[in-house]
Amino acid sequence: MPTALRYFLVEEGRRTGPHSWAVLRQKADIHILTPDTPIAPENDPETWAPLRDFPALRNELLPERPRYILRSRAIEPVQTENLPATPSVTEMLQANLVRQNAAESELLKPMPPRSNRRRNDYFIVAGLLNGLVVANLLLGRPWYDPFLLGFFAMGNISLAWVLFGVMDRY
Image: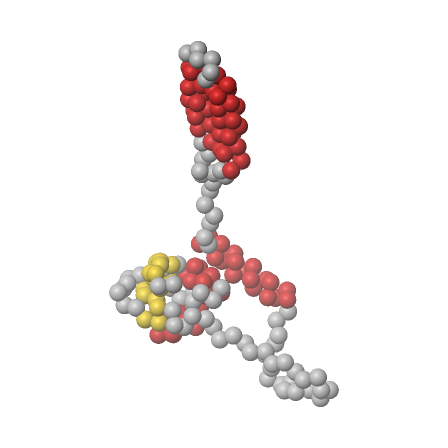
């Protein structure tokens, strides 16, 4: 890790940041950062340059990847000397765990769920609607009563279905 300096980036046409070293490393690992990505240091946010113009940072974030050569199916060995050692799966997984543990504290965390006021809202709205129905029933209009009873039943069923079946969290 070169310094504790943080950097601004341009991602999808928007300025983001400042990002810490761990976030920059994470973005480089998932190929969001390229040598052409515009970047500016936090202490000089008006000086924008492509990542390739910061050689120390580029070499740390985008190191030269080893190129693996596929051997032919011939029996005779091809270029057996000076070949880089191929890492095993265990070594690759251990390197990934080390990198994950180093960046763990700075990775993006999921948002906690918001509080749910559904039950209180249901009782308030149901109480108001049912109060209106009961008040109209007490007025004593006999031709109006079947409609009010239907509205009472369908209104309560619909309200419960909308608040508890359709809406997830609001």
